[in-house]
Length: 340
Image (cartoon, rainbow, N blue to C red; front, top):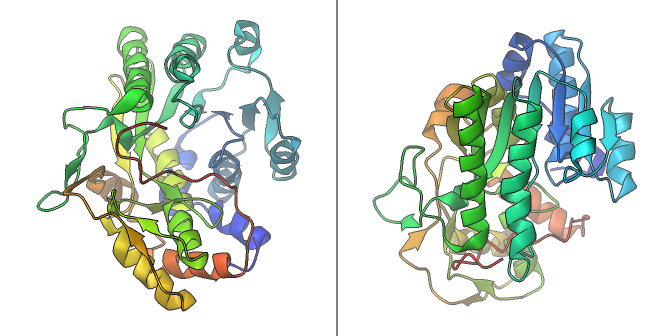
């Protein structure tokens, strides 16, 4: 089990062999844009730790508006340099330090319904600004499995990297727009790029498993309209993302990042109920399709996730029952119509 925040942060920033190997082969500093989000601080700390284990000296620089000062303080304690500013400010982008390696974590999802213009601007305009500024850099850009269409639950491994894209809803469409802008600059400028299509990273403070566990613990109904999902331990997702930075290419290298199995929300909820000794209530019934991805390419190149589903469920149940802190950011995994 995970005793508290200090141990959690240590586990989340523990680099896997693939990340250590990639950062050993890459020369130069790493710039992380959008570092103050859910995954950014642990990824930045992972870069520091992986570089140390690889025996490579480099600057790790995190960029964000830092409207909440706590992530900035913590990053600095971990050896990450921080730069505060707004990427919508062209002058700010121009003065960012030139780095040979960039991890792009900027994005907007929740609040899209009713705020479509800012979502599109964040997800499509900013990539063009970053690509022009860092045309000679190697860029790993986070995207999402939402760019795919829902796939049948039965008889399908999920969407593969070469499958046709058919995003549902304006958020998902703007994410495809983000990918297309990155691809345009990669092809026209020769910028080396990796596109990371991530499906549901999870840790103790947020994620699909936390959402389901909290509903079970508080005797709330678990919705089943979306009955199946992919999840991956956040440290494994970040390890794969950093490893994929070394594969950046023009045209872009595209890779799905998620766990190996399609997970039944009903079975996960029932497992939480057994661990928590709570009855489980459901609403709705499972549909025949789900938004799920085939991550075999990532697992073959970077290794299978180090933390499996059973362990994640056990950790999450223990954390929720002990009233561990959360980020209070539900995933809304149960949304099927793309309205966020």
